[in-house]
Length: 163
Image (cartoon, rainbow, N blue to C red; front, side, top):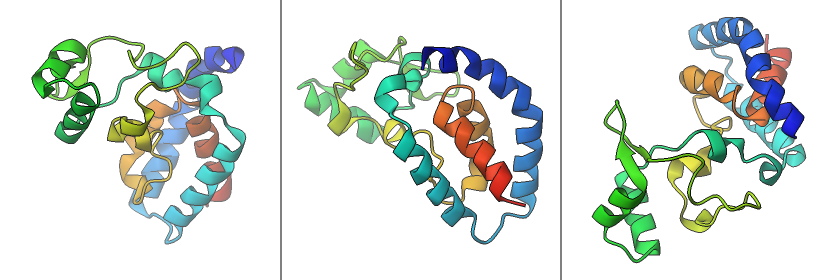
């Protein structure tokens, strides 16, 4: 897995032009069955991919925290929301709450999430490859292909399976 993760950013960069072109075409005229195809590709990929072997998303990027996420996590830690924010979060240039530091402070040395049951919505949905109206999140997906080997594989299979 280490070797795959080392090569992934360069691999994604090398395919970026083709991926962008593909997504532009998808956005213009998404196939009627796109969501079904994506769901199938997502499920296939995650039968082979074990996130616990990787956890690159938790090591290199942080989720956006919604107000509900903050309330749920602060309750979990028996803190006031303001204390949770002060301890773990900062406001980014888009005025969103994000982690102060990476890797994620809730990631264990064994790649297990210490707050898995109450993790942020963005973490639960990552890498967003099974989302409805998938063609509308092309920019996020392009970024994710450089972070998540599964997202890269799904996009490559998608290119092979869709006209």
